[in-house]
Length: 131
Image 1: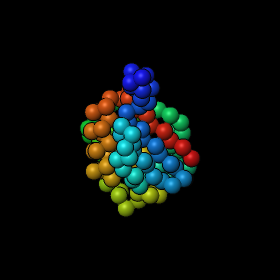
Image 2: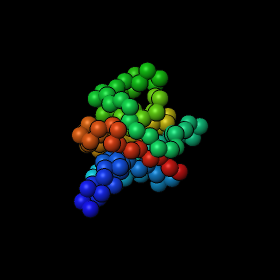
Image 3: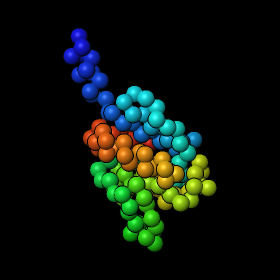
């Protein structure tokens, strides 16, 4: 019985990052425990943040955008093409749509999330972005 329970639990991702675009909010669940509910900024009018389920494919401690004037993107977690979850200096805009499509977080939250992704692994991290 314990082996079956372990196998069932192993199928779920160890880290779930759920982003609600309507509420401009992220909920992070690690090993079944909610670690944080944080304000984010997703795409402003005329831009888009991709919807769906993703696994990160690249982590970059400090990335500089090649598309937006070398804008700093600390604690970048790339999940789809050039789209990433990352820290921002525009913390006053968090909770409102303000990005070109990435998911912006307060730097301390981005750092914590980056660490958790490294800890559990990219294959065990699920990013869900919904309207």
